[in-house]
Length: 188
Image (cartoon, rainbow, N blue to C red):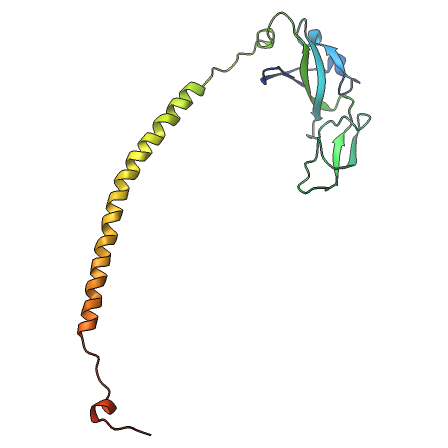
């Protein structure tokens, strides 16, 4: 089973456990002590989860079985149109052996931080490096665009001049006359 703990600052940590411990038969919205999962001094609130097939736990469906229910929104169904309803398969709000992931949030914090208690290293922030790269890239693109624009402006001017010359040549050449026009006879 995976236990996912969400912190108040938006970060979340997950850890796998072999058993459900004291979470069996608990429902979404119930609180429990984090001591069974290595979080001494923490109190956690169950916010959701999913089973081994990926079906989500839904708070308003009683029991621990999978059921097909008519949904108009919320967990398990996002309507595309206003007023749309559809039958979807979801799992009840009670945690059973088939639940593989349990989502929680912290209600009461302990003395030590979650990453330290679980031995999870937090990833170094790469935001500063990516921001520097983003700042450098647009400057390079601007210089390249300026060089490309100049030749494009010169080429159309040459083309327009050659078109004007062709038009003048066409006007200078007289059109060949038909035989009837040469003789001046009208055929009826």
